[in-house]
Length: 106
Image (cartoon, rainbow, N blue to C red; front, side, top):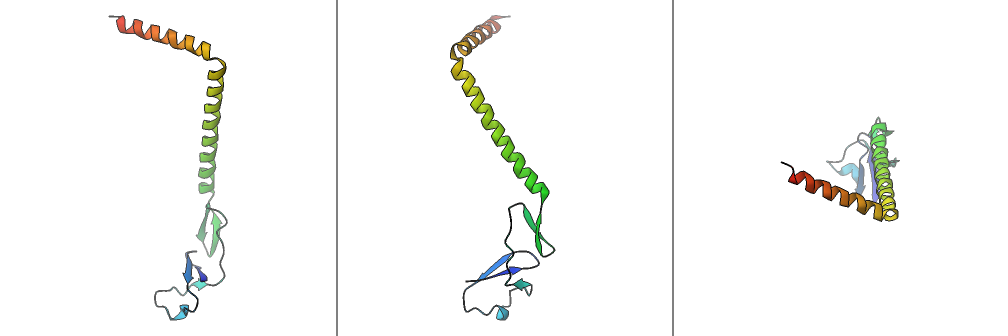
C-alpha cells in the first residue's frame, strides 16, 4: 500500500502497490509521498501543515472537566448518603409529611 497526502487538503490517499498514480485522472496534482501525521484531533489542515485549533482543544478540555466534575458530584453525594442514611430517611419522612399537608390545604 502506497500512501500520499494532498498538500492542499491534508487528506491521505492510499493506493495498491503497482498503481501508477501519475496515470490516474481523478488524482490531484498536489499529492506528496511525504506524509505529515495529524498530531491531535484538535489540529486542522491549513497552509500545507497541521495547525492547532485552540477552540477545538478548549471545547474538548471543557467536556473532560465537566465529566470529571459530574463524577465527583455523584461520588460525594453517594458517600454522604451512605454515611447518613438515617438522617436522609428523616428528611424524606419530613418531606412526605409536608407534601401530604400541602395536598390537604384548600
